Image (cartoon, rainbow, N blue to C red; front, side, top):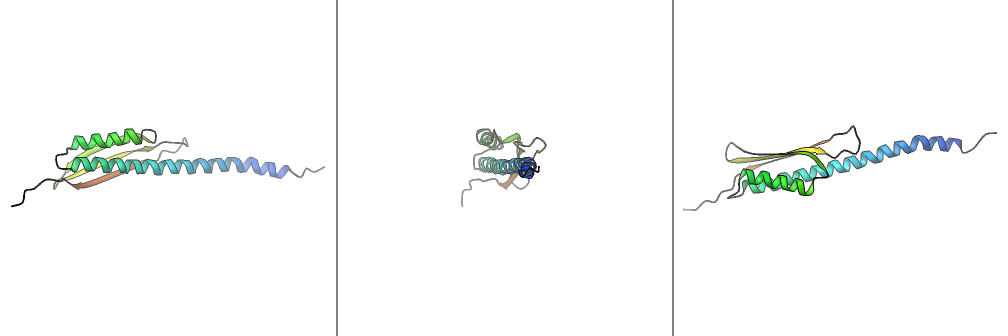
Amino acid sequence: MKREGGSSAAEAVIAFPVFMVVLLFAVQMTLWAHAASLVQAAAGEGDQIARAAGGSLPAGEHQADSVLSTLGAQVVMDPSVTVRAISGGMVEVRVSGTAEAVLPWVRLPVAATRIGPEQEFRVSG
C-alpha cells in the first residue's frame, strides 16, 4: 500500500528549517538597520554638542556615549566613539560598533561619521 501523505511530511521537514533561517535572517537585518540608525543618532548628538559654541570635544564624546548606552546598549555591541578636531576649525565625530547577532556566524558592522565646522559667537563691527 502506498501512503498518500508521505510527500507532504518530507516537504515540511525541508521547508520548515529553510523558513526559520529566512525568518532569522530577516530579524538580523532588522536589528542591523536599527543599530545603524542608533549609531547615526549618537554621532549626530555628539556632533551637536562638540561643535556648539561653548561645547567641547570631550562633551561631544560623552553625549554620543550616553546616547549609545541609553538607547543602544542591547543592540550596538562593542561601541566606539571618537571625537577630534580636524583642520580648518572642523570637528569629526565617528561612532562604530557591531549589530547584535541573532545568527551566530553573522557580525554586521555599523558606523557613522559626522563632520562640521565649530560654531563660534562673533561680535559684528
